[in-house]
Image (cartoon, rainbow, N blue to C red; front, top):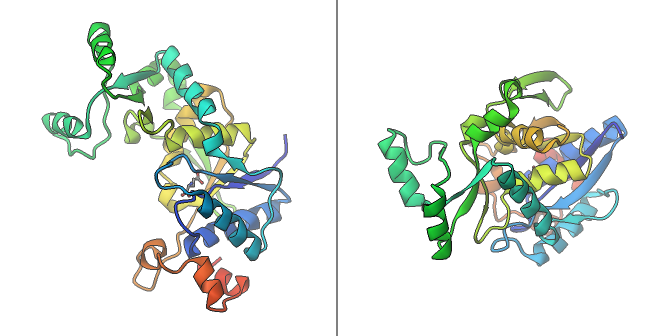
Length: 281
Ligand code: GLU
């Protein structure tokens, strides 16, 4: 297995901005230092927000920044069946259950538990008869991963879940994973054939990713990704979370300068080197 395979995995919900560029610089810089490879993956599972024209624009922006990648681009929307197979595998093994609750009902349930609506939700499958009745009536549901079943399945391994966190300057740390901080995550819904966590971990395994490098805004995700990897028998990459580009007021640049796409910076006459400086990489 190659020592260092990483990926850049943007979601084509708009034009790339400085935050994306920073991420790309971190990814390609790490691969260059390690003599590794970079793969490109388009995470366009949200078909209401992702547009093919943005995918095209991403390829143009990356080429302008001077980046190239190995092999074909993986377009996630072409592989929904693969992600559904993961959810069905988990369901078949009793690790996922159908949840028919609406957002409001979950909020009410959480309130009864003395929890805010946003607290990690954990539930359980309905009794078989009740489930069959709802299915017959065509009620929409989400597949959720059962933390309780996952814990039972993994036994001691559940408590030992951890991941290697490497800082961008190479400092290693072993972080104990806390999958429960996510609750019973949604794996898929009626209108969303797969959740990000499923598609991402599936593809990281399929593409032989050894190093995941992404922004701090996604650092919580590793805690649930290692659980999915353990349940699916997938290898675990090393994680690096780089700082986000912040504006002078300390707010995330992505939001503050949403209108400032790489395309508009380019039109303003900035060079890729200027962009790199602005991105602080
Ligand atoms: N598609 C995600 C994003 O654009 C990145 C996910 C990842 O790197 O795991 O924020």
